[in-house]
Length: 394
Image 1: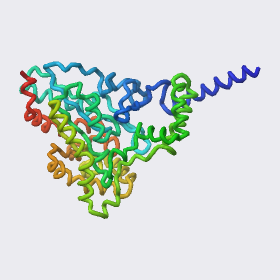
Image 2 (image 1 turned 30 degrees about the vertical axis):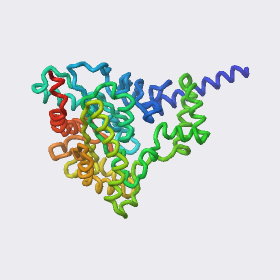
Image 3 (image 1 turned 90 degrees about the vertical axis):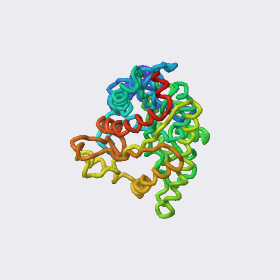
Image 4 (image 1 turned 180 degrees about the vertical axis):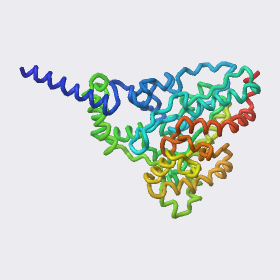
């Protein structure tokens, strides 16, 4: 009888855990519910098996190669292909919103991303100038990436795909971190947290790591691993600083911004430029849109509400840092010799009937299309001046 009770209790706990995991956390056994995998080089990378019912309708949105696309990228690159990579953080990736503060919105499909619309636009624009050339725009965006991770990503993997051009859609994650002395050491996300917790022998992390193996086979262990991960994130993981030092507003802001840029994103793009010289590709940097940059008169009702939510939730000084930094970027990039285009605003009165933003910087499909439209003439001009378009078209 004792054995029967034990078995019955175990089955009851498993059933309750199943309800919690599937219906509360929208998870399943295995790693399908994890958008990212830990990466020893880049901190984290896309999980090819990721799919959640709420977020993706149960469909895979990552390729086996770890890109945000449905099909594989051919290797070696065909001779008739002009290959462009879009790199960036979660805006380039096209993440959605879980609805904790902002309205719920699933992650965009692969046919709703900036990369998809830019590829379509380029093919239509250049069909006469580059006849017979297959123009690819491959989405290599990963949520929470800083510009130093773009360097690591290319150095680790992307060079094998022989890109002709890389375009970056960046800004939110590391352009405004004014006052951060060492951007790489201050990065506290994914495996950067994990390694610190491992070195310091943190108990919640050790328990979480232990539970990950049986969590592939039992909803009870899956639930325990989710709860323990939450405890680890809350009490043991180092903070993730995306806002810089607000006290820089009271000092020489221009000087601190210039120094932050010099040891941070500008240095990373100059490294990309060096890699481009070595591997034969060109690059362009685009400043991603932010809802707080938009003129509210150009926004529809939903986007105005999103802008107000964003202002209410930003920490003191965050919006002012962003608005003081943005006008300085063109000169900083020009001094560094880095090609830069500001598309921090995309709304205009003609689009007031559309919802452009999911939240503070992430885009709806309509917003993604507008960003691609803004990028198009710059990328077309860059292709013409890059020196490799003619060779490919021949």
